[in-house]
Image 1 (cartoon, rainbow, N blue to C red):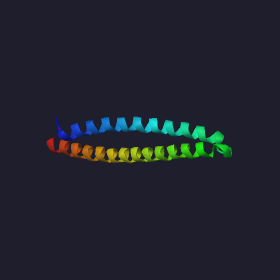
Image 2: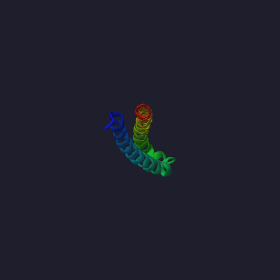
Image 3: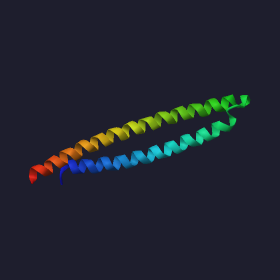
Image 4: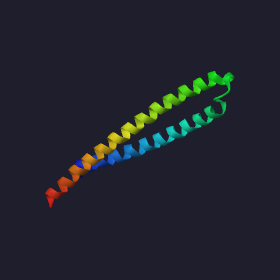
Length: 92
């Protein structure tokens, strides 16, 4: 089997895993935002809001990392796909 094809399959599997992680993190971030919204104006809840905001900031960092990893995987997939296509043209 072509090495480029094997690598493309591995990248596709990694892409699926990252997309699932990204989706879970986005759901988690939305849940945190939903907790913050009703208590935002309550001055007695400033500590809780600050804690939730910290969790949300951490979640945003994780989302950004997933998005970057997904972008890099897509770029790798395109490169391997081009190599695979070139190798198929040479064989014909």
